[in-house]
Amino acid sequence: MAKRKTWREKLSDSKDLPKVEKIPKKMNLKWGHGVFVIPAPIEVDAIMRRVPEGRLITIAEIRSALARKHSVDMACPITTGIFAWIAAHAAEEEISAGAGRKITPYWRTLKTGGELNLKYPGGLTSLSRRLKQEGHRVLQKGKRYFVKDYEHSLFRPRK
Image (cartoon, rainbow, N blue to C red; front, side, top):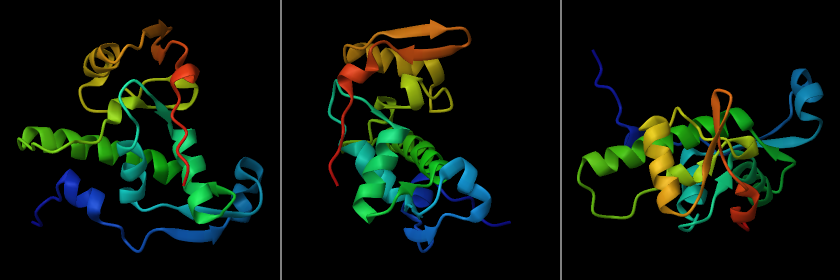
């Protein structure tokens, strides 16, 4: 049986990405017309790493930055989300390995609308603790959790 890749290996494996393609016809209703980029995992991680303490970014902001970088209409929402998740797990793997260098601050990356991604390592407890340490307030709305007034702390990367 083949050895399973580590999260860091998955993050580094670009698989011929990034790729710029025309938006498929079957996605036109949902995504519109034009050209999109399927980013490389390391590109998503690089944007997440740039978010300073006390600031936040959403997957939508990451996608906008990737679209600007590649001069396209949009970045793939599916792969961008998956690669952010991989970056989060790779960061925790770095911590477990005793890495002394700066890790990707994945807890600063939110879903659309300021929602916490409970699939990130540590779940709600870890994410809330880290966000509160940086001055944010986490609120529960039904079964979901959000950063209060997250818009005031958004980090909007240039290219």
